[in-house]
Image 1 (spheres, rainbow, N blue to C red):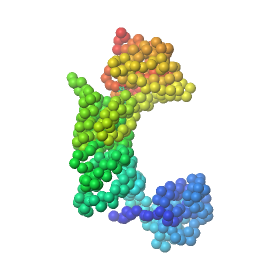
Image 2: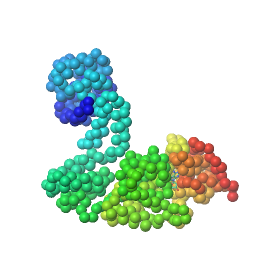
Image 3: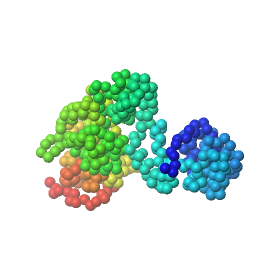
Image 4: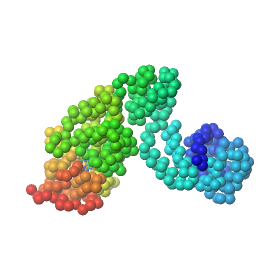
Length: 468
Ligand code: SAH
């Protein structure tokens, strides 16, 4: 090991930065986060550092560096970008045995700066010892993706219970097992899901019972939006949950590409339509989620798009919460947004469309309960979900309620996926012909002036069946 990683305490300690350009400003930002009292020496300062000095966040000395500037400093950064000056600062600091870092000059530095992941109080530092800073930054980016955003909350949460756990559990293995149970189990999952109040209750019970989750382990259900299909559109939270779930319950809209990102040994349960068999009834899905959560498992209920947009996420959430199960809802990119982006359709546009409505083409008993007259307006974009097979009747209703037959319309099938297909036309053709799109994959219809923009990355093969 060429460098020993240590974490420096700089709160309320005085540090020196020589230089006041962009790279000095980067150091100053970091040092502020560490609570240091920052002195900056440079003949001129950039706008950011001047502004910070006016707010009193840093002390600016607008003159060249002098060795006396090093007095009483805890550490020194040279970031002038001028080799002669940086070398003078480094030599003077080393002569006083001060820790000194020269930006991009490990040869002049007696400590180096790592790439940092800040989930305070959890801090991860990655260093290549100056050999390959870009590689270190890539490693940081990979870690960033896998560490949950609320990791710092979890560490602080655990910190609050440290002395209680110490008091009620013998040191050594029992206490170690206790904390492992906390971090691997539903208590940590609840904190990371933002349900700290519930987690605290469970934690109190657990500390008092000397066991992280007592006799009956309690699970959690995450209702996770998986987006419209392209795995790149998963949220970081969704990705993280997929990689830590015990059980993944998914349906027809979730493609294999998305499941490739899931933990290999997670149990996968398909609740969509299989060949010849109908999909599970909602009541059966609810019961399945409950059963696994009650068995103490971390369940990811993976839904296409967003769980709260035509996804019955609300029903599942209510059912589970009424039965005392912790539920977290993780939003996803809903099909309308994904498809619009993939087909180049701005859903609103100044002077063209001032509103957008997401509406279902499919009601409980077939024909949806939709007030078409309220929606039939030329400056309004409509995105109709679940309209496959109903394109003609939807178009007919909109024309009946006053929209011109020439109003542009588009159908986007398998939006954001490699098989995406796009049809463009107008309400009149939609009503009188029978676009075939929607037969092979999920499809939605966009109606309004903006739909004329829809374009396909790939050619549309035979967009129409025979009229009739
Ligand atoms: N919760 C989902 C919608 C579920 S309803 C969401 O927020 O996107 C199912 C309907 O969504 C389908 O009938 C179709 O209209 C639409 N849909 C979902 N994924 C789609 C995709 N990749 N391309 C086109 N439409 C899609």
